[in-house]
Length: 397
Ligand code: PMT
Image (spheres, rainbow, N blue to C red):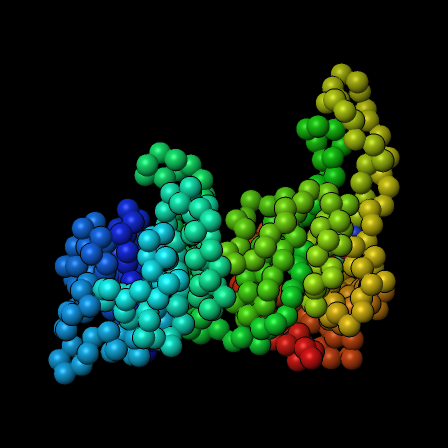
């Protein structure tokens, strides 16, 4: 995946530095040539020899280290790298980057580079929350530095909160987006709905469907990787919030509609992948109904159709809807394309094993308003997401 790419991996003095050994290995496994630069503090936590053995390349620390014969090391790394990843990045090093200090090899490389830079902060939650750190992060973001947001968890010091270095897989995902991704959605504001909705019957029961949220999350991640600003409105789902997208968690169809409305003004592309419950119980009981009470007839009323409701305020937004069908797939999808004012509908046959609800793969037919039709093979939901975005890309202004 990263074949032929040169990645400079900067490691700073956080206890998470040991995880960078896995990161270096994973980058290499995916084909990158990795050169590690340690700060002095990082070198106290993990030895340069570890990275030299893992990468087969010299490791530098001091600005005057010169391991590349006939070349000035900091210029070689600054100008010869396709990507610089700083992981973990401490509060101190963020401050240095924001203020342009250059008193060791890594800070000097960063000041001399035009390569894209990605940073995975790791620090105590209080240090992360501090206005000075937040100001430094804002400064760096405004200069185009890509952040792999820190995760929530228990710190080595015993405190709990946001500040743990992101998973290696997430750092790799951002690196992949930077190194290999198309950026054809740059400037687009994409609003995606995903997952099921749960409509409560009583405090312990609800009406639901088999949607996992995987298709919508894959779309949110693909749009993010292609340069869009993404808001994901996600129904009850065990999936993690995608890194680099704003995620709004909702439970019911009504909440999903409210969340969509709250983000409407800034949206230029609306993708409705959610399996919204068409009906909800007329009333939700305040207490759990006991089975001794005998048979139970539920009265249901229709939920709002989010797509149809928002179609009244469509403006020049692009609308992409899904059709989850079990028979007459194309015919039913075509009807929904018109009825819901869509520019593109993604039809999937949810009666097929291994695709549709809760599977890792999908197979779809795209039908567009201008009569075009395109079928996909069975692929991962991430590949399907890119297949859909490829079709939408041609509709962007
Ligand atoms: O989440 P996964 O497990 O990955 O599964 C993916 C999926 C099967 C849920 C997905 O690929 C899919 O087909 N999503 C749409 C499911 C659906 O509700 O289809 P529908 O044919 O009933 O609805 C048509 C369109 O109207 C959809 O875009 C839907 O989001 C939208 N809708 C439906 C009902 C409603 N009240 N409001 C809506 O906006």
